[in-house]
Length: 109
Image (cartoon, rainbow, N blue to C red):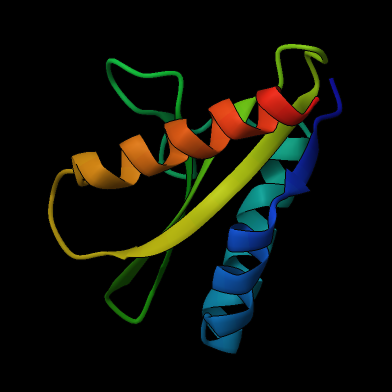
């Protein structure tokens, strides 16, 4: 199954600010997911939410791009925004921010 990733503005802005090698790693990991590779080390559903995260690591830094599946198309993932992960657990405010963006996305459709 081919998956398409749609990048919303905040996701694009975050990716643009990432270090070049980290950005390349993120896009590589995303390309694996779009080809159907199932690996929780690069794309994982966050517990108790409909939010997923693309993951990339570079030079001991962890980068996360949060996303959700577009309910109107089973093969589209919408990337909402990203952040540099500094703790073991994904901060709740990042998940809530992604949920707000998701709700706004559906409100505009």
